[in-house]
Image (cartoon, rainbow, N blue to C red; front, side, top):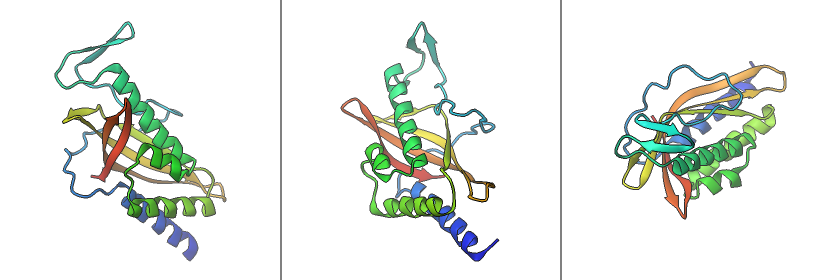
Length: 182
């Protein structure tokens, strides 16, 4: 490998690590997420234990489960984040993560610059456990991996890494509040 490629991979790894680091939010560790999916675009969230979907409506069987509308909203928010990352669209990421700080913005810019210079469009694979509701917030543990095809047509994968995402709801829309590498 050339020094430029090694330097670029280092920038990508450091950038992804910085993107998922969060300050002092102490969230529970991620559960085992099972084998990675091979589907093109599978559902990001796993259904919550104790929830049953009956004739298009969710019956809640345990305290703290969320409604089907909220579950769908969380799925949409995560899919929008995934799409924005794959499009290397920082404003799109900021729409779903309005509190994104300058350090993480710079990390995204660095990752996107590397990907634009060295590869074709990346694919962000997110596999997340069921949402956990606490204090009007939802925490989700995910496995995140980035696969990209270099211009020489070889595929590279960075990750998977385990992350925890804290989401909040404002005006019936879910937003990322924090992300933390586990």
